[in-house]
Amino acid sequence: MESEETTITGVTFPVPKQYMHRFFKEGKTIFVKPATVFKELRRGMRLVFYQSHEDTGYAGEATIRRILIAQDPLTFFDTYGDAVFLTRDEMIAYLGNQERWKAVRVRKGNESRKRDWMALELEDIRAYGAVQKPERFVPVGGRYLRE
Image (cartoon, rainbow, N blue to C red; front, side):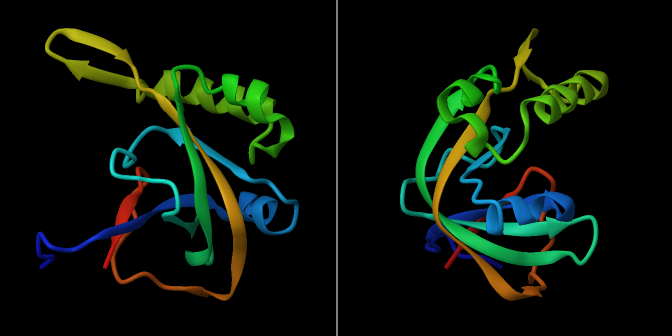
């Protein structure tokens, strides 16, 4: 059981294996996703890439340089262009799937609104020599890393 004195040192998010090479081999530096598990994140913390779908496990890490929040994730392309790890068309397709799943709603009282999106600007991106199995399950929304 974790004590309340543990320190948050970063975050881990799943990335499908088919996209992982974009960070390690193609030089993509912007990770975008719906804004989950982000309120405790700070500049200088680590993002550990959890490779999902096949050969699952931690595949590498990066240092978070900057955190941006926006209602429309397409605005990240205006800011960062092709440094975003997804293409604009892939993002549009992802948004269409989100609408179909109704997974973009945040409910407070009787109000519902679309969930914000975050972009993590990364530096010092490095792949591990081999995929490492995590001690704990990594949900689709991600989870904080603690020491």
